[in-house]
Image (cartoon, rainbow, N blue to C red; front, top):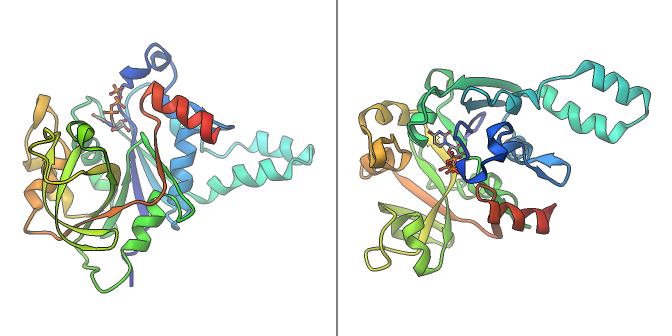
Length: 274
Ligand code: UTP
């Protein structure tokens, strides 16, 4: 039996400074990849594992993100009239989904963003997908691979699962890096986490990618981790405080990761996927 996932949090409240001046008026999550905005690819990732309850964590001015998914009767009627069946069924998929919005009034970190959705979560486990990472593979998207990896006897109810990428040693200082106790193929049991280590300090070259399955209990931990680096409440600090208490696993994804959070990464994404 795998962990049953029904809810996902998509924290998209960041200011997107690396995309300024574009992000002055349009969120980077609405940048197009083909004819879809990046955020639709993340929502589709949730739908692909059966999640139909999605909470966007946004900041003021980013309301156009949830708006993209709201039912538009006039547009649907017009597409119907014009016989645009494919477009129509693509749009209608989102009518089946419950979208919820919470605000992060101040950008106090990724952990702080998730915390804003605490009252909304009513399932034992919740998927968290940050806006910058897309994984493309014949083995499935990022969340599909994590859910698949979750199957089997190792499943425990209060378990963290995260997506991992093997990065070049010289790049470890850009990521959170994990120390691995045991491996079962791509599935890794994690004993420690180090944020942005030097190549000499790094316990491995396995980097944390922005996709998680978290137990609800993380919301009890987050308020207590305090402000980490740069005054931010970071998810990685909450995970560090859970080491030894909650089993933490990672899955080294198959395929390619696209970083749509930087102009260079976005350019590559559009060249390959767009
Ligand atoms: P980033 O570190 O990429 O920040 O956040 P950003 O604001 O999106 O972009 P830059 O660095 O200014 O260019 C990673 C993810 O975490 C979310 C972001 O929206 C993005 O999905 N995030 C980060 C929040 O929702 N709130 C925060 O306080 C910080």
